[in-house]
Image (cartoon, rainbow, N blue to C red; front, side, top):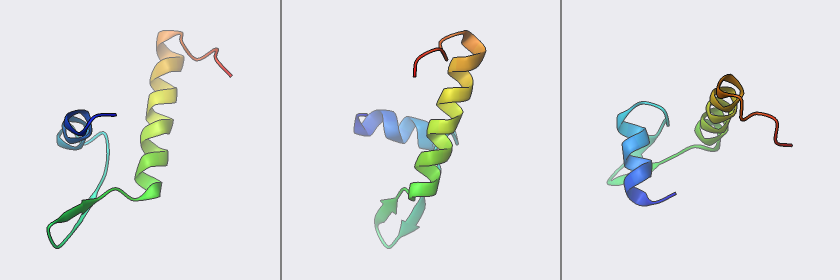
Length: 51
């Protein structure tokens, strides 16, 4: 994913992050939750048949 897409997902609260100093960090748990969200959206739209 591009940097702009990541920031877009952060602004939309679809991807979680924490800030440490000037750095914005995305925890592994937030990535897993985001992937789970994408999978559930794919299942709703009928694209969830891929293994």
